[in-house]
Length: 150
Image (cartoon, rainbow, N blue to C red; front, side):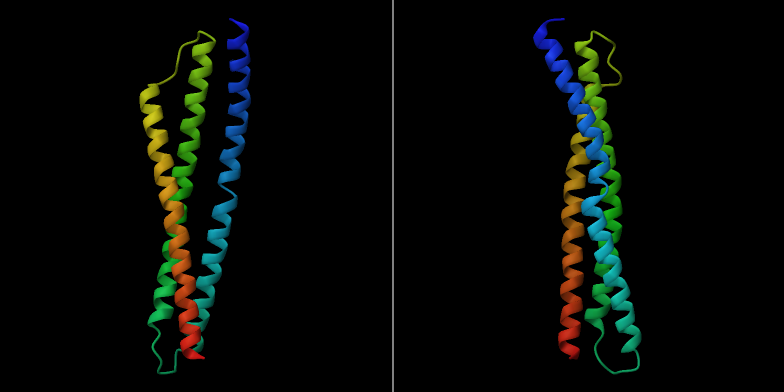
């Protein structure tokens, strides 16, 4: 194995270690924020609904905010799954590249692994955008309800 190949192999192994760390980090940060804010919004919306249950005011904004907070949680859970899969396929693909350089047998079909990684990345990106948008919509609707009530 040439010096360039050995250096590239070393770089790939370092990349693999960092990619595995990103799997954990990605599952912790953005999602924690969405889950925390959506859960808090749900609790606040439900408490407001209970507090204004006997009053004859329009609670449509409140109901819609509850719906959007719930959707944000569900979509976020889907992004957790696709994010995990994207990182796992990334790790498999990188391991296969290492195996090629080490003249070992590649595991699985690399084209399929790349395709699944790309699909998972795409879905994770859009689920994250959707969860952020639904969270934002829930917050706006909650604020509108409070502003109209006060």
